[in-house]
Amino acid sequence: MKIKFCGAAQTVTGSSHLITLDDGYKILLDCGLYQGHEAKLVDYNRKWFFEPNEIDCVVLSHAHIDHSGRIPKLVKDGYEGEIICTSATRDLAAIMLLDSAFIQEKDAEYKNKRRARKGKKSIEPLYVHEDAKEAINNFVGIGYGRWYKINDKVSVLFRDAGHILGSANVTLKIKVDKQHEKFIGFTGDIGRPDRPILRDPQSMVPVDYMICESTYGGKAHGGRPDNEEDFLKIINETCVKNKGKLLIPAFSVGRTQELVYMMDKMATAGKLPKIPVYVDSPLAVNATEIFVMHPECYDDNLLAYMTTDPNPFGFNSLTYIRDVEKSKKLNESKEPCVIISASGMMSAGRIKHHIYNNMENPKNTILVVGFCARGTLGERIRNKPKSVRIFGEEKQLKAQVKIMDSFSAHGDQQEMLDFLSSQDKNKLKKVFLVHGEISRQEKFKAGLKEDGFRNVVIPSLGEEVEI
Image 1 (cartoon, rainbow, N blue to C red):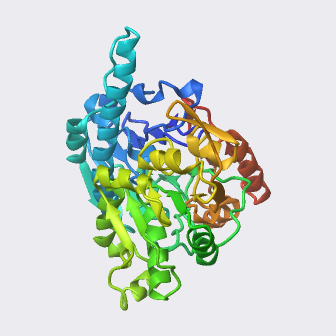
Image 2: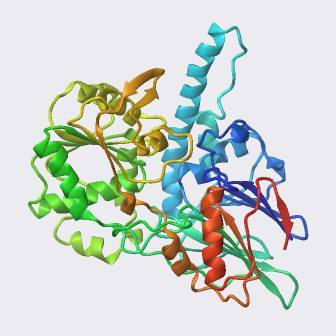
């Protein structure tokens, strides 16, 4: 049996890991889009470390594009099998992959205009709307907490990862012979306890081999994931005291709904100042509708809150925006307000335009509420430079930049160690660290060894190991 690390190896995005059984059966864990700008990975999204038509089954941990975003290309290039995930992931992935296809088409259109001016050949989009629609037909949604039989030798178990709606950690149970089984675990993205909306991460059964994320190795977030007090303070300082705009780059799925829910509770309690709040993202609007459809993923606190407020994602001063002209008008407006918009890493989408138009006003604040991959606009702004190049223009960064990593959907080092505490260290033969930058992985590796995990390795991209 072999594992080949086909993505998110010594980097954070592009999750993809290939399990090849002794009889040749191939299972792909995740098929994510690489979203950074590292020179060595410039062509990553267009190439494969395997033949797509040789894959027998895809198992998807959750709907985030860095885990699901190349599935339409996989299908376009010859994959015909099932894509197995939770029911909520199936519903979220449907809207996210269609949105991703739209972005691929627009990106190719923009690049081809520039290439044409230079006399270069045009490029094809990675995939288009029809490819995404075809891929969605292959999705199979199953429930948490029960073994699903993939074939006579392989079963899969999903448990709630507490990361985004529908996210799961993955356990594969593989029959080696009549008497023996091997268990391979894949953490997906490990969530955080006590986060708004979602249940806490559920532990995995003891496994023989573990593929484990490491995004925040060596780091402590500082502050609870539901840190309303600090969030309210930033709203008041920016919008009430300074009469400015609070810009919040947030992923359309997960982070946006958490922010809205927290402000909904503030509004219900009479704490939220009477200022307009805008969610400016068509995808976020659609995703919020899907959140409403999946109460099976909610934690007890949200379910209890809904007995007094049946709509935790809406309050009087909140406006959801789909229309692009209404989005543009927000930049013309001088009124104090909160604008939540995608993308979370600020590398694309409407938030990039809001930052461009508002970053030179010292009354405004950019609130960073999550991880930004190396090379993205978000990473540059997190470092609070004096100026930033955006849309080909050098702009002064005069707006305040605030960072609240307590909003992160990824567990920090101690939370990841706590999650892994259910593992039998005598049974567990090897831990493979993925989904992290090498400096974070080295720190997490040291933490794991200090905690008694014996064999921890950091595979390189394309590396294949026998297990």
